[in-house]
Length: 163
Image 1 (cartoon, rainbow, N blue to C red):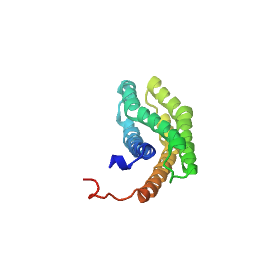
Image 2 (cartoon, rainbow, N blue to C red):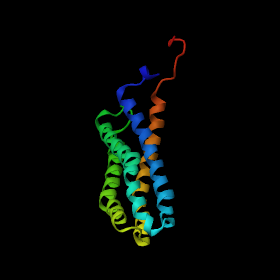
Image 3 (tube, one colour):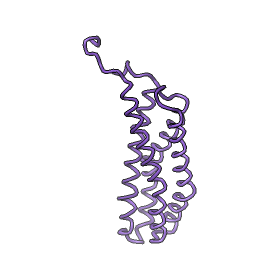
Image 4 (cartoon, rainbow, N blue to C red):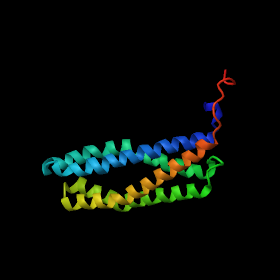
């Protein structure tokens, strides 16, 4: 099968997979992690949050950064059937996510790490996380649609000629 896929198609497939992985990871963070922080005692929260941060970097930030780079690479190395405007839109979603992270989410996370749990900060984190959720969902839907477009282009396997 891999001989039937060119490099641009493989790049798209890896980006598609990372897009879905990152969306799922962000859902776990936003809908599970953030919403249970209020159950952690104030004396334990700072240590918990500081221990959690490197794990989030490994499991979320690094994959999201790699995905963002791959989305930009698709601008130049996308499969021919994928319109350039869709990749420009995906890049715009990535930029919104990074801007939200850098300007809103990371400063809140740093305050939580330094000062401990604050219900007001936690509420702000949960509410502002929707900026990233909406653009991540939109990006996943865009890539899902592009996957359908791409799958229609890939010719079916011919088992007789593959022998």
